Image (cartoon, rainbow, N blue to C red; front, side, top):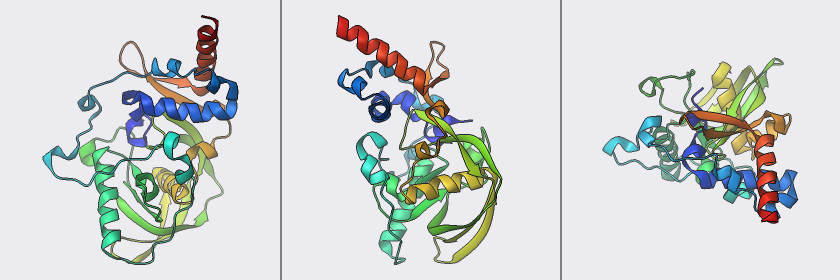
Length: 259
């Protein structure tokens, strides 16, 4: 799985983002650790890397309306607020759609919701037909979903990979419905009803959660299903269980306290 396309790999390049998000989670599980400022250990998991190595091309010389993606460490309250329905298909909506598409293209990402760029509207985009390690040039343009609602969900679910551009440097495993039926308005203003399966269904459920103020962290069965993405000495991505990261933070905090 290409973790960058689901947000997890971003933190490998941007240590500050993942440190802040780990701080949010540690605050809930180990309040004493926050006072001890243990998060320097998380910084040791992160190293800079050449963006080209990860296949990120920002606009390729074309002017693109790429928006800043809000992260959990600074914007948790906003990200957990349900978005408002879109009432008019106007110039503002067209600009929002273009911004979502350009931001998805620039990362490159599988999906993105309006709330992640600070717009509280029930709009998101998803690249349908995605498969593991899909070459960038084969990825489909984002399909836009406006005022979507999931009408039906299969009883069967599957446990699989889940991550988010707003929670960089981390990923987890969640249970999602294998088949869903969705009603939504497309970017041309037409109401659609479609059935989605597999990764398409998983990605849509993830983005639908965003417009409802729900994060993939809320879908974890336990913190045992959460991981921090780091880069090992060999330069390759390394997945560290979140609880292990917390233990290392505890050890460092104790060492700092004693010194």
